[in-house]
Length: 253
Image 1 (cartoon, rainbow, N blue to C red):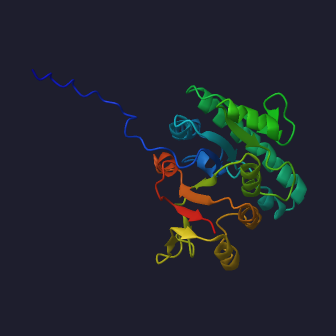
Image 2 (cartoon, rainbow, N blue to C red; image 1 turned 90 degrees about the vertical axis):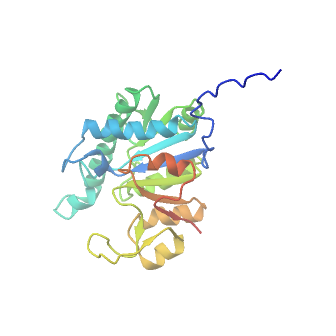
Image 3 (cartoon, helix red, strand yellow; image 1 turned 30 degrees about the vertical axis):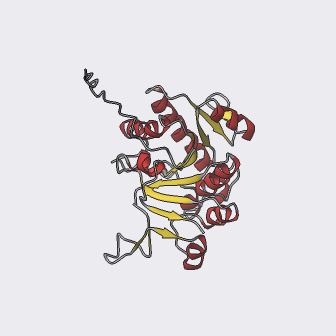
């Protein structure tokens, strides 16, 4: 007598591919947090970003985050208007803490345990950035947001991201912006701009492509740390990248 086959049960994770990265450093531009606004923090955008980040957190990978300050303050821009560069840079570092706390709040509102560690002292709202402490948080499956840049003026948050990615043993630096990759010229001003699917660190340096700070490029090159640049506003792309999709532009030797 033949036994009837049991009905198939749906298992959404059954065909889920394994992540190609087990540890990432996600660099978000500050402008992304402003959403449709020209300035500041849009709580709805912070919530949307939190959902995107949770989609990869649920894949059980280690996640470090760094957020720029361009939605609040740009030190270099202030310096062109008379402010001392060092003062402007420190104000920018403070702005990154504001962005970090807003994103931590959005993540914890959806059940994602998160810690903000700052390179400059803000003890009432963040922990000090200590590498071994950050690694312990990652070991406990917490997202670590690193604020305050490098803690020193004259260094961009791109450079801070490259530095922390190296320190925290990330497999890749994911630079999330409002553009979908690296082009040979400005795509907003040139309709014939060519997008690269892959480009080397050396080509970035030689062609002086300003898609990411050159100090950050050099640091990643020296430590063999690939960078992927993509548009965070395309829902689902972050998860697809972690699962192996070739989205945006990969920078590596």
